Structure formats: C-alpha cells, structure tokens
Length: 145
Image 1 (tube, one colour):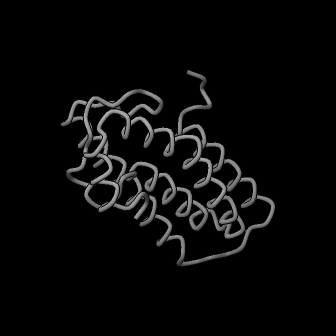
Image 2: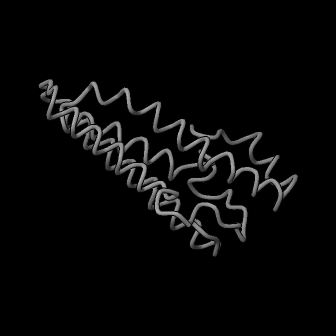
C-alpha cells in the first residue's frame, strides 16, 4: 500500500494547508476557537467509538482491505462513515482553532477526496461481501450524517 492511501495522511496534508493559510491570512476569531476545540474533540470521539466498535466486530479499520464483518451497531447506526466524519470535524475545528476561516475552502476538497478515494471503494467491497445486508443498512443509514 502506498503511504498516500491512508486517510490520516490526507488529513495531515489538509491540516498543513490550514496552517499555511493561518500564517498567511490570519483572521482573529476569538471565542470561535472554543467551538473549534469542541469540534476536534467530537471528531476524535467519533473516530475512537468507530474503531472500538470495529474492534469488537474483529474487522479491519485499514482502508483498501476486505472487511470481515459488516458493522452496523454503535456509532454506525448514525453514520456509515464515522471515522471519515470525525476527520472532517477535526479539519473544520482546526480552522477555527488556528483562526483560518479561509481554510474552510479545503473542507469540501477533503470530503471529495475521502469519498472518491476511500468511501466509494469501501462501499463496493461491503456490497460485494455482504450483499443485501449492506444494501439494507445503506438505505437506512446515511453516508455522512
């Protein structure tokens, strides 16, 4: 697997972009930084809850690998992709913490990369491996929220 094929690498690249934007075009946001910390903490919570649930199901959290189980319990009742949602929340929160609202332009770019590079191929693997069970879950549980 290439190192770029890991979502944390993409998150780190986008966080670096936000940091650069913050250095070039800082905008004092004051109290919004507290909201940024709340978003980052909630994003990390979503990631941890998803990893724990996948661990209980004894399936992989590593993208591009075939999952051993279809996890629909816990946090996966609310989002099919809570780890990726957590990544996005960390990015949004970081733009507020770093006083870089212009960095918000990177959020939809990041979401598209996550969707095309990771989510859609994962959904194909889940559909191939779990068929109607995946289809039923995907009809009642949204991809992001």
